[in-house]
Length: 517
Image (cartoon, rainbow, N blue to C red; front, top):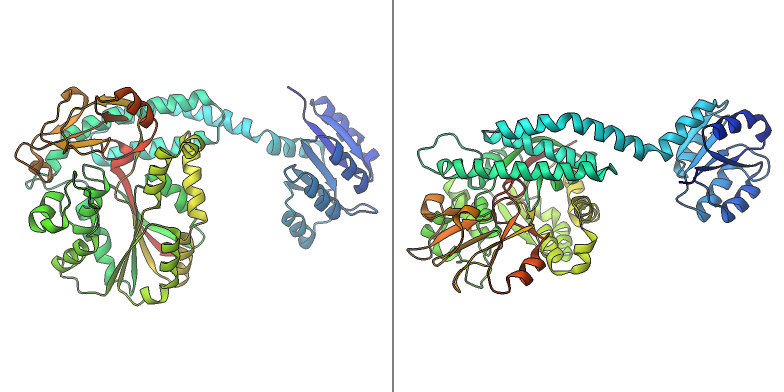
């Protein structure tokens, strides 16, 4: 491994010989020059890891030297050293993308601290993160083993996502693999928790249950309509909790999270079921029984979420809420821009509901487009892609404008997604649903030890297409594949993001109330 090479530019370089000897003794390689012109020549022909640059030199000034160095090597870190403490000089240097700023007289230890901070930070972060995670590993295991309630499972999931975020900054691949194994253990235990409790929660006799899809609007949205002259309810389809946390950080300069809760998506964790239930305030079987014209069967080719506005209207009516409201579904950037352009019109409403399908579309694109799949090979890359969309999207522009107008916003999703790894064989007839994380049909053949089965759909609030219909759900990171061309299909879908089944990533999803700062 080569030593770190430093260029030190100062017209009084001889005075700094003790500093240079100190750095050489610490293993750093140093090169020097006494003016800006020589510095530019050296930077053009040599490779340096970092530059220490005097701000006040005869001839070419430190600031001009900095500008020209950045034109040649924009990524090289530059530490500005000056005698002046004047604020305007400091601001000018910072605005010119300096990496650090030191005031003369500089002590050798200050230089060493700056070097370690700028060039060895990744090593320090990795070392500290790894050490801390090792101490918490057993505690997280105990949390998973003792999680016997919905609130405890939300704590487990938040803890795992915290360490996912922390280890993304680390280069310790071993610890990342350990975390993945712990996430797998957690999803295995979570599946057993859902298997034991899910149907019980849906029983009419059950008093205490988690907040679930049909109750989100009545609990989190409707109470805010009368308290606000205008309320926006935004649904980001197929958004996981880690994606939401990442996006929320981009809004902390103009919105604060007044309240946040993790709720449970119903099964199947698929748009047709969870989002229709969200807007209708009803379980899918009730939607099918009371308004069959608004429920499209799995095997039918018609779009499955074409009547959300109708379901929402009936929901408001049942709740006795008489208000002026709008509903907009956004499938493209042009449609998103169109919503922004009619903001003044939307502000005249009591409630505005916006559904953004971008994350779901991106998830499908990741499956179908090889380049996107290659670019998002791990969770860090996937989060980076969705983060990039958000910070450059018309949606964040809309949120900034709403904050300026002092508008309260409720943001949620209908379900999340999980990266699938293990194929499970399932046989069905032509009317069997195509989703890889759940199947519904009448002639399903499978190994009951590998899936969660609901033999009586009515008990789970799910519609029956015929008297022998049943639903089955993939657990953990499994996915359901027909025997025909099994290896080819399994290979194609392995490591893709899917939804519909049972996992923390799909079922534990956020609903947040944002208030302007």
